[in-house]
Image 1 (cartoon, rainbow, N blue to C red):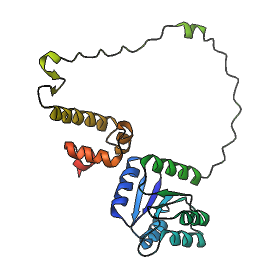
Image 2 (cartoon, helix red, strand yellow):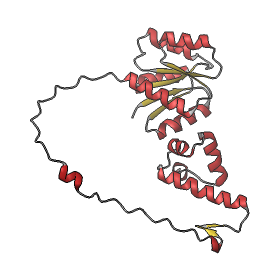
Image 3 (cartoon, rainbow, N blue to C red):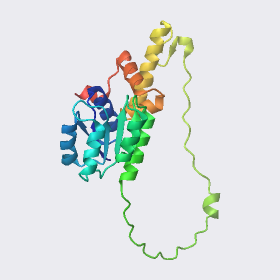
Image 4 (cartoon, rainbow, N blue to C red):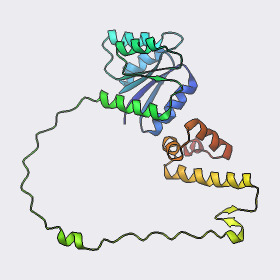
Length: 230
């Protein structure tokens, strides 16, 4: 979908953002400092940059200013920080940053800001002149509307054989905690398969933040398809 450059000196932040953006279908380039960011900027020509403000060698605002002075701000740049002041955020916006994300960054805010940045970064292309359309024949819809519509038969719900002490594959005569873990394992495996192991979509579907979701899957002994393949 898009090429996104993530610049952050914290390896955990880089890995988390990379996982999220990869699940969304983007190509991700990672840089841990300004030197790597400069090289990646020239090598990959990213569609959008996520740039941390506080870095050990050159801070993000200085790098942003450098790109602006060299005419290299031809892509949206979103600044990130957990310690920046309002003045810093305002300065970055004045220099050329599109937006500012405060850490810890929520998934919804991250994806919404990236979508806005990519939409802004794509210049509209002129549409070719449409060819004149021939007059379409008028179709009488009465017969079609009156025709009976074949509805798919709803699957009949299987009655749970509670009398046998089982609910599907879950034994009901075990301790509550074990039965709950077994149910949660089936629940999350179902959603992982349904969403093709996209952690972003499973997070949205189940209502869990990604950090909580990862912790829950690890607790239940469930590994993503990607990890099993490595």
